[in-house]
Length: 331
Image (cartoon, rainbow, N blue to C red; front, side, top):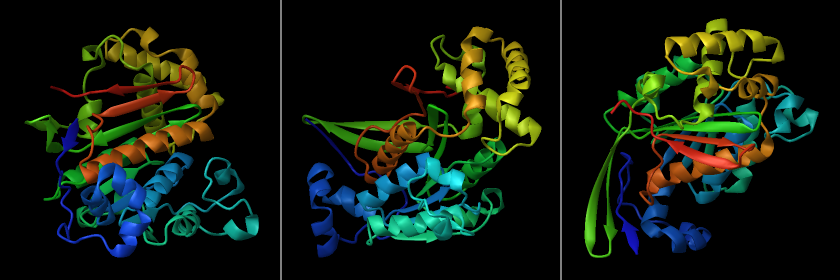
């Protein structure tokens, strides 16, 4: 039987106990992961940028779990298209008309658990300063450019306290989660022995800088395909997910150029996979549930200190039904 010690994420108020109301509301999950883990969840502050369907699933999961506060950022105005994969948006035009995605999702999430403080912040991810991120213990980003992800991750790493950073992307029937817990130290007990663990995570930029030729031969093909799409969007000045079948020839050319530069056989990045990603850039709701569930699970692990954390990429493709964890680090 294995038990886990606490892992600190630089949270304030660690000494505070759960209220009687919290204990009653979260009784079942306290029986699963203990009162200490639940207390840490109730004191955690989470920032989410980009309200996609996958992120909506994640937000639902951590709100139901009882996180302390959740701050949403997404200034895009809601459209009829948005609720095809985002169940938090009411499918009634006079309800969502003129409101932002963050505002609509905020209203829905408050109904899931009134004890969780859900709020909206306005602004662009790249415009937030380092101090803005210091208010949170966990930062989750989606719907943003490659450079914006790198910048947000870098700002989290500049803080004196450790902030867990996650980047999530879901396209068509597949998706990925990136995790950066920086220097993650924890201990676990196995029978009568205490084992000290120390996981060192690379930043998003450092992970992506690992040469493709140095990765193992059975590396997830989705990893390479997602990098090609990211690079294409960045080169063309597109927003995340702003691709279509009309871009396929240019995407395939970029794949060829990247594989040549990285000394990687082109078979590792199938044309059929890239075609799926550009043809159906929208999310597939059942995949949103899978990716959002994994993301919620990993964030709860990082906050509560319960369970081995994922390091450092997770990939899922409904075509083979597999979830794959890849450790992509320079060392």
